[in-house]
Length: 150
Image (cartoon, rainbow, N blue to C red; front, side, top):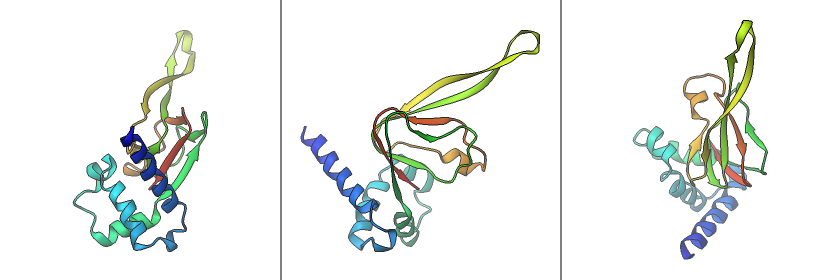
């Protein structure tokens, strides 16, 4: 229970910093953001060792916060990707639409559930940016969700 309260307190601190205008974020605010971001899988898999301290400060100044209610769409398959999402709290489902060929040249569109993002710090949306391609799936909030945007 103490760990849960600690996570809630840290999340609230992160929210307060992220809601500030990026130009008004203090050195202490940047330390809070760097402390969280540096421990995320996104940072460790994609940017560790290649981001210098100034770039890290610039990155933390540009982080945003978006919130979604249950059933809200974060992005749709086929959308142009302009950011990566890091889960602060809540949960999101990834679904993919695909065409299946039926008989006599007919086809239909089906949707398949791929996974649920529910672990704090998990991330999604990077593929569209890495490969300069449209979003490969649709992400929908399955709980009230707060996402840090990069």
